[in-house]
Amino acid sequence: MIYLQLFLSYLKIGFFGFGGGYPMITLIHNEIVLQRGWISQAQLTDIIAVSQMTPGPIAINCATYVGYTVTGNVWGSLLATTACCLPPLTVMLLITIFYKKIRNNRFMTSALAWMRPMLVGLIAATALLFMNRETFFDWTSVAIGVVCFAAVWKKVNPIWTLIAAAVTGILIY
Image (cartoon, helix red, strand yellow):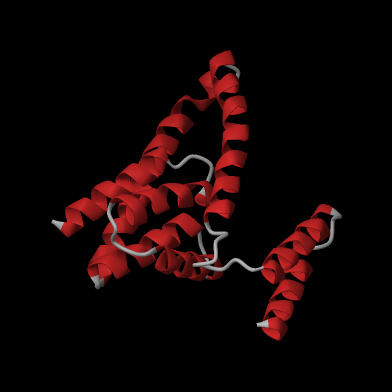
């Protein structure tokens, strides 16, 4: 039964997860932590941290880790990952078939224009969701984040910014 629930949960996340991995984290949190209670907020934070460090899209990596955590085996990982990938794959295949016909359609361009601010809001909600004392909120982390944001905003190479933030984090923590 847990496998069916896991599959349906990630199928829903995959179907409604527009805008990539970071906006999907809010959906994952709602479905897996709040509604199902399969893992805690702290566990999800750790899973997201590991998912960011491993190669590949964060939502798919997160599905893999959550599937394993919930079921305790590789089959849960495979099932959650497949369910997360299936809806976007299907939609993208359908869109590519009709893309040339609908790319200049005013309804399609309006829908895409409407999605941009929504995605910014979802990414901001994800950031705020994990900024609490239970998971990892302290003023030093906020300062490192603000400095990194300013550096990238000023066109500093993101790789150097990432390295500097990692070294700073190692030295401070």
